[in-house]
Image 1 (cartoon, rainbow, N blue to C red):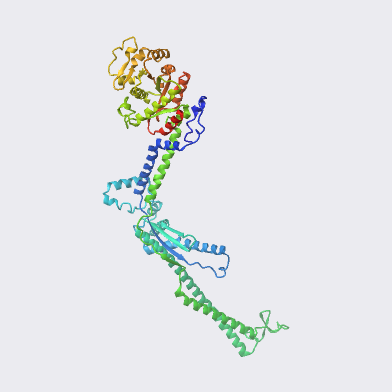
Image 2 (image 1 turned 45 degrees about the vertical axis):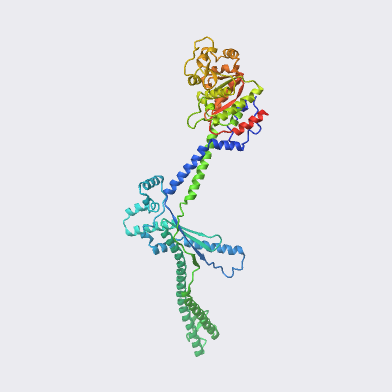
Length: 627
């Protein structure tokens, strides 16, 4: 995908056959991509670090205190022999029940009452600051002395006005105000409280977040203590209710037992089966009827055995209830909770939020991802010349040179850099370009070389001057023709005085020797006078200048008009100069097409002002071409 934008023009050229692996991304392509976009890629992590630092500096430090309790599960004895799935389900239900109790408002109310959190100014909600508030806080921190900034992060910020505050002013009753204050404190408590089970064990972690580390530890310990105390109070209340019920039930059974015993004793004393009946009455179907109405009905009533059994039953019930009451009274002082604290909370030494190192690392990572994404998007949308592979895929031509800037932030270079600084990267790259031209000269003699570009500022005149200086320094008689009559960069910068034969009809008499560079120069005035941009005039001049071994022609750029490139058809070859990262691919494709239409042999493309060199790939291709 990195090379998806580098394929259109080259595929349209039927004379060009792309490499088989041109569709694949190589490691060299990735490293080239990183070198080209390294400034953008690295600037985004820097911005991410600044953003993370801003977040850390303007965020209140939150301290987390942790305590741990252990609950004792209660599984009925009959269910302990069941399968493990049933036991696990019971355990999970019991633990979840304890977690729900810890999160309940009953525990919150007990802790609030115990610690007096309603009137504690340090017990405030942890609000999220807006961007405006963060900038205001940062400005305040910058205005304060350094000794005051140390504790500025942990200051208590009053809670912002909410709808409840408006209600306070609307409802003047003291009860409504107290209720609203309590509700806000409970919500703040629930916001800072954290309860979770430790794995699959019976241990429960209780954490509390607060701006004050001492307050966080006190609240966490108070929560654990309130949970244990709530269990004891619940069991004590249940035991008291059970004792009260037993007392009432014992009294009822005692009365029934005494009545049954009394009836039995009376029956034994009277020896009368009609105990409790009128003498003149009879019992019919469970009802007392007068004598005479129940004739023919056999009297019925409780027997002695029935009365004794009833009395004995009530006596046993009374003894059982009395034994249960005794056990309840004896066990009530020894109530034990099902939970105990195994790790009390202590004052945290460092804040748990924000985690400075993690936030900074995330800022760097997010910035790096954004930087790579922006670099990839820019690379995908970029339609400028940047790599030799791009030139090969788009134009079907070889990149014969990658020339870096001669001086940092001072343009492309001077016209004699190869002689002033022969060991500079620019000079070494230009010598490699000269070697590549020499390799092309083996297959086709290159005596007259034209140099053109898309725009005037691409550096073609600098390339022409330094390349001619290299040929001249090696003992080759070299002539440079300034055919760029629209800009005349070589004439203006190399010739400080007019030629003695400037008005002469002979063009040879207008050729000037350039001191220091050891080559001859035909000024742009002579080129314009003799109309060397036309192919016929250029061909006649080249035939007349047979004593020069190398002739370099500085042609007009493509933006000056197509007619200025007509003379390139009579030259042995043309070099196209492009500026790295600025010359559009489409214009270079159009320039290459025009030169092909004019039947001009294109030697290759030279990139100037290159920020990231790929000379290894160029040398590898040059070696393969030599073989």
